[in-house]
Amino acid sequence: NAGVMQNPRHLVRRRGQEARLRCSPVKGHSHVYWYRQLPEEGLKFMVYLQKENIIDESGMPKERFSAEFPKEGPSILRIQQVVRGDSAAYFCASSPEGQGQQYFGPGTRLTVT
Amino acid sequence: QKEVEQDPGPLSVPEGAIVSLNCTYSNSAFQYFMWYRQYSRKGPELLMYTYSSGNKEDGRFTAQVDKSSKYISLFIRDSQPSDSATYLCAMVGVPGRRALTFGSGTRLQVQP
Image 1 (cartoon, one colour):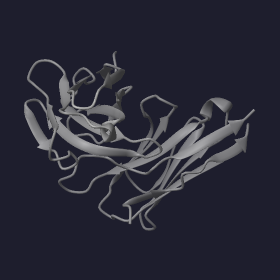
Image 2 (cartoon, rainbow over the protein chains, first blue to last red):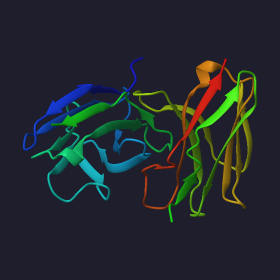
Image 3 (cartoon, rainbow over the protein chains, first blue to last red):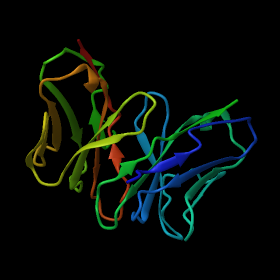
């Protein structure tokens, strides 16, 4: 009865490196969402995916950020050439098809030095 | 103007008090309303999920939705120190948009 799993929980990258964040949804959930939380702020939507499809990426920065949810395996959020402003907590959520409830993982805290 | 407004607090109450947390929103298309609890450096935990106007109760928690006023509330009865956390309201339902829109969160501290 595992919930949403995210790894790594903490990630430190130097400016210019790549960050890869992974998310495994609740078993049976086919919808995945990524959110970013900056210090002292609420959660901001980034991207919504279903298996092999990006449905809504309206919250994603146009450059350096990409996401995928392959047929097999976890969803990946990739940030290329990280900058200090990318330091934040990144949360993944999943939902069963057709329902509004979203269940969140523990998050990945990215620190860019 | 933000679509969802939430008083950031902090809100400090004595143990056993009734806590009232509120959010207002501007987009009348929102249909589903949620309250999440987030402990420091943890992921948000879904507490309440409501659809229609009215009240929904679950243990010590009551969620209230007033769509005509675009106002939602979460009441916590007999508050405990373990309730100390940030409470986030969230909503969804705008056609074509599945992502949740969050308030900025209210930090609650329950003093023993």
